[in-house]
Image (cartoon, rainbow, N blue to C red; front, side):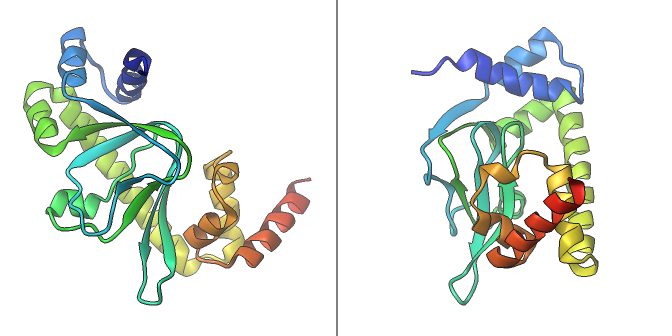
Length: 200
């Protein structure tokens, strides 16, 4: 049995980085949260399931990927502690997910159902503000990644990745990092050596 208090506090502190919460707000939020534990390789979401929760990584790491018509895994998201991971398309549309979300390490997830989140929007104004700002940030990040993917060379992509997300590279297998960046594992190895040479 895990001690849930520090885990819930971790999410509350995450909220407080963006919005102000009163004690009554915190009680209201924590009453609607659910903690789940995943073993390495466990699935948080599978293709064909509808995503009905927003999910916060309290501990561990997860990846999201879809499988193309050739049977190849294409990594679309990587997530570590204090990040949110989800298929927003499925969550917002109510349609079946086209991706898998899988634990890369033993992980602890805090999730809140769509229904409970809708209730919180009405009960705690700060939660609505938090998600408004989070969605804006997510959209900007997506736009940047889309622009970078089509217009920036692989080395610049890699350098941006390792400087923006420090320490994340050591948490995931090389094939996932390579897939996320849209390159081969061999080319990733070359870029890593080049980067180490450039910064040394």
